[in-house]
Length: 412
Image (cartoon, rainbow, N blue to C red):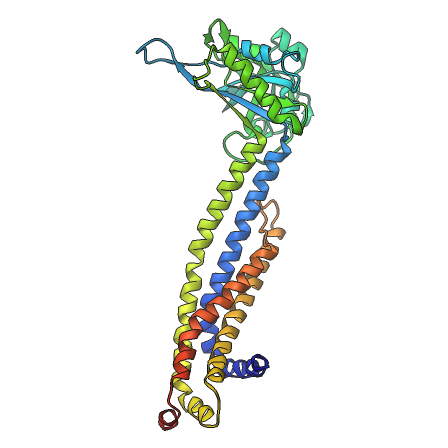
């Protein structure tokens, strides 16, 4: 009942000094809005990245080679993952949980079309690459088994490559040159929207044999062409771990590794990648939110400062209330509730601002991420606001309770 009784008193006191109260709440408003916005950006970015990774399939495994020194003190290193390993992993009798084993060998190379040229990443691979990596075509088709077997001069390109070379994306049947050799464009990938390193929009794909023998002049290891990586699918999400074990056993046997030897390759799964990305984004979000929370501390100090001023200004009022029989707890509650009202009101305004920013971002066309503000974040914001009110309002309230009523009545 006392809480309800002192609430309108606190509101009246704040309303009597609107400008001062507004400036006092500013630190809390900025702090809450900043923390919620950063949390929303972090969660939105994390969700966007995780969705993108998950869209590529949760059954995919990627095998990457390590390097091995060749010759004692030779100083040279070679990759040990080869086309022989790819053929071995494709044997269903020994790998019942592994399907669609796809080699890749890629590098940066210049594509030329007419007077235009573009430096881009070109990957030699097989027909199953599109299935394993879930590529979609905007025009034409991906590489076929016949083209792989015949080592045909054909290429599939991304939309950015097509636009830069031809200033359009309808380019199936056009020709591009690689090191003077003409390659016919048989397909254009659907725009993925991913920017930066590894984007399919800025890539090209050719038959693996052409990449090995004619374009990159790839070295051999133990008589077999090396590959930069191998992708494969497990037969189901439940059999990913079994597929990983089968791949590891085969490669360790083929590479002559003993029980105590480290593997000269690594196997990564989409699940492990999702866990890693989630951990990194959560850590970054927490770090940035902690920095933004400093403004809450500044706002809390402002609350304490104003409440101390308020206690000084209302010394006569406090003395009169105590002289009329108000208990120490009554005075304490009066100022604590006033501090709580200030911080909670500032918190609610901060929440409204962050939601307004989230709605604004949703209306921006092609904005890369959404601001995801969850219920837990709102509860945290309200809790932190209330905590600031209690912590930074406690000292001024206790100071008010210590005032002697006779001295307080004499105060001018």
